[in-house]
Length: 181
Ligand code: ADP
Ligand code: MG
Image (cartoon, rainbow, N blue to C red; front, side):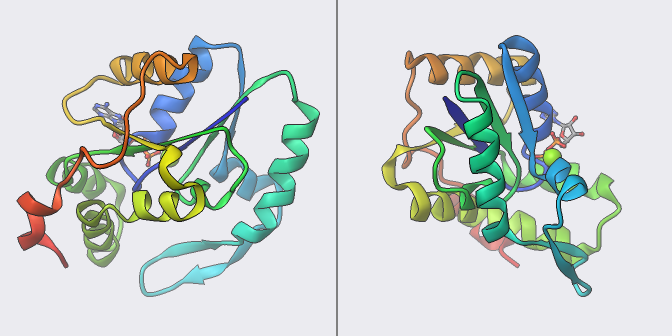
């Protein structure tokens, strides 16, 4: 069984995935750690300061890890994790764009990179990309005003099949379209 956790940078993927990993017997794979262990780097977008990830090359690597851990709960987390198409569950973490902007302001990123990510959250880019890969099995969790522990509680219920958080509930566009970059 594999759960993919994606979302705009700053929505809490790494924090929440590590807590979930502590809570459940599981193996945690983060895209950032794969970048250290495998050659997935296609270079850097100098204007924005992004590392460009070779998500095509990521697919056979994850397939191998999956095959080697067939009996284990796999938690796969990272921005662009939605480009891996063979997960059983996929959850997009969402966060109020103003809170996200505040969090990203601590990352020492270029303003352009912060603003693009805030706009991506307003527009739900990660959700629409996840939908392109997975269709309506994609779930969304609004993390705003929830502690990481509370979010993990929800994820455990999603894994157990006790809760479904369907698409179409979270919409930041109506409130924040004027902040679009
Ligand atoms: P991501 O991996 O999605 O980029 P992180 O897990 O690195 O996000 O979290 C970004 C920042 O937000 C960190 O400083 C983290 O401590 C904080 N954070 C994450 N989740 C929450 C939450 N539910 N409530 C408050 N702060 C959070
Ligand atoms: Mg992270």
